[in-house]
Image (cartoon, rainbow, N blue to C red):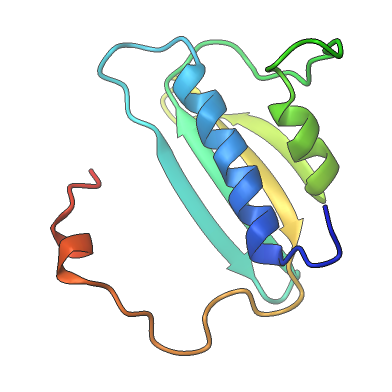
Length: 124
């Protein structure tokens, strides 16, 4: 990552990789993917969680130079302070999480403007 990379840029990339993995996991057709983001000022960490109903556990892959995929968890491992996987309550699926160092404030300092079109989207 470049010297101009912000904590938000890093969080966006890590979250994107975790969500992509969740969407690619073998799971029932009507599955849902959940995202949870929490910031602990006391610990100085941002925790990103992505839950899915998919089978199996994610593993860091060793890829060859010519392969175009399979590097997502390599990025997560390189950028996160720590990451891991835990089973979901009820025993179906898993939650993959990553902790990023976030000692500085990473949320906007003022109000965030949301347009009416953003509010009308169906995010559920």
